[in-house]
Image 1 (tube, rainbow, N blue to C red):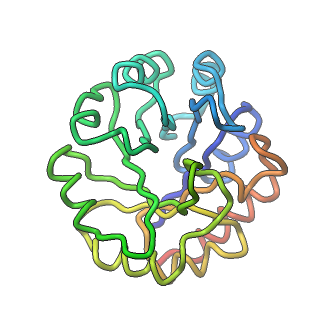
Image 2: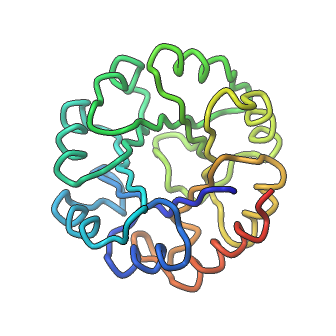
Length: 215
């Protein structure tokens, strides 16, 4: 079964809609540069109201490992999703309050050995692949080239848990799953009416498309 993460949650009503529709995980963005940025206090309040068995992830770009640990502890986050080149294996190992997902934004000649080496050095076993756009760390609404994504996920095989992100919405996620066969899919802009504001109908259509396509 393909897992589903709805990212960029800023409001309790959006969080509950995603949970009721069947999302497995929710993402909260703590980067001050993101249009979906949320405070620690707001995130903690939303998380406290979630039903059981929903995984929560924090998205981090400029925070140190110590700051990430503090935020995860304060909010009750189970995952730290690392979106910057600054997070090498040592920084990932220093995160002790949650599991780690390391994000890669691959270009055409991306070598999966980079992922495998990072996994070996950091102990991280889960990676997210997002579309590359200079200067922007995710949430662009752009997609990874289909042939590039297919190659990366095929070469990784069962070596790690690989998540597909980047421009996914209800009209293209089914084809992406059939081609790439990811462990999970992740969307933010694909289920929004504007940055940080989710649209219930789009959330439901996205999750239905995933569930009807499961391989």
